[in-house]
Image (cartoon, rainbow, N blue to C red):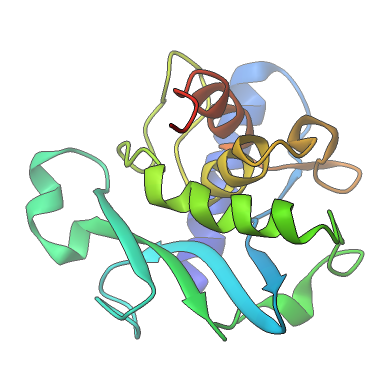
Length: 177
């Protein structure tokens, strides 16, 4: 979506200026999980998109402000959908990365989405200066599943805003019963 690219560039230009650094390329994380011969896709996307309210939606949260979240135009969906697609997968820099081949880790990643905190998208979260977004979801899911999410990061000269907020949130979560 052009608005996403444009707003991302504007955000990064302002953040770089504030931080006294050069602007970086921004990266959006999504995840494919393979388990028992099935592919699942994890992503966070606008609630008004093509799959609004579909069977893969496991949570929704507000965008911008809590009060705006009453409208589906200001809500996001956390999707964990069987045979889902990542529309921009062909644009993945350095190609997709394999994180693990362990079925127990795959199950843990999928299960973690059921307890994902639905903070306000685009706002600082969990006392960090990092915004809550799709990168937060993927960092949360990987870290919650016991995988080494802090080791993963964007390609050179890149940033994945929201990643550290997801790591902080996952590190503070209550262990599952």
